[in-house]
Amino acid sequence: MNITKFISAHRAEIDAHIKRVNPGQRNITDSERRLWVLNDEGLYNWARRERYNDARRRRISTRGVLGLNFGKSVRFG
Image 1 (cartoon, helix red, strand yellow):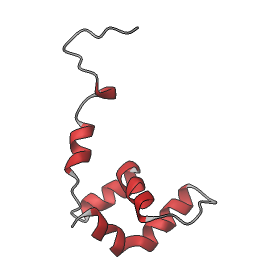
Image 2: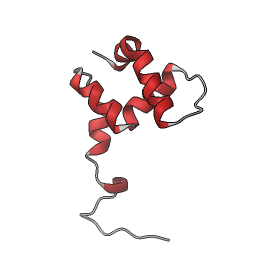
Image 3: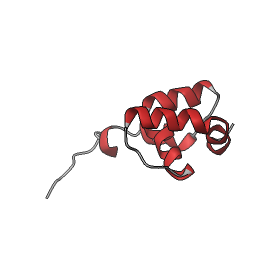
Image 4: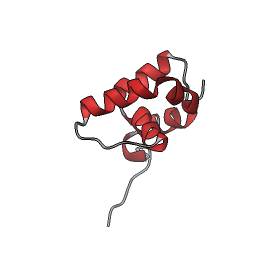
């Protein structure tokens, strides 16, 4: 299942979660819902249990803190 299908299937539940976490949230678009699913741990874990799989998120999450390469010296300024 891709993220678009996941959002379509669970739009009401996703919106309820967003409004519970962020009261006063205005109506949101599917693009904003996608960002919530990718960035909210609870929504993301739920999507994973539903067999949603986003390779880009895995690649980003395994890069290390702030994407820094700790194997080389980093020079700031």
